[in-house]
Length: 149
Image 1 (cartoon, rainbow, N blue to C red):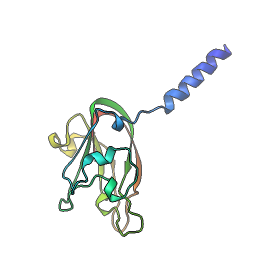
Image 2: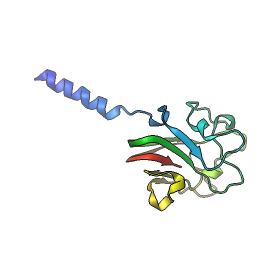
Image 3: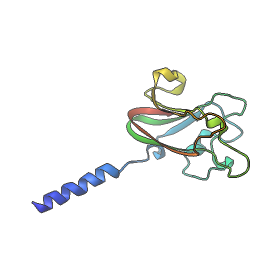
Image 4: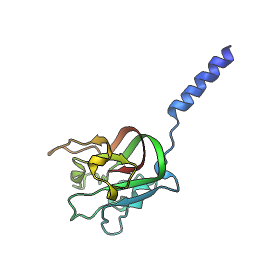
């Protein structure tokens, strides 16, 4: 009887804490609403966690609204989403453009839906003079194919 209890306990821990990083699967595709220079969407998911500009995806400065989409390739159960925003240290670069962002999930692409047609997992309510954190872990226990920021 003791062996059974121990086995069940180990299995429960393993199930509770093992999550796959779905964004790093080879079938995952990233797109963004526009591109600034050569800073394309793939830089947001290349595994490099350095957050200075040359390592980050960047949308065109002239666009007041921007989005980044992660296409997981098929439907998956999502547990949480981690976002690392550009951080240049004390250079004066701040995450102003990140204020009021939202995180949506969907079964359809960003270009095929509006925000009201998606499931909203998070809305940032930061207003001036405050700034959102440069690293955010957002719980989002849903099933979807597309993650849209």
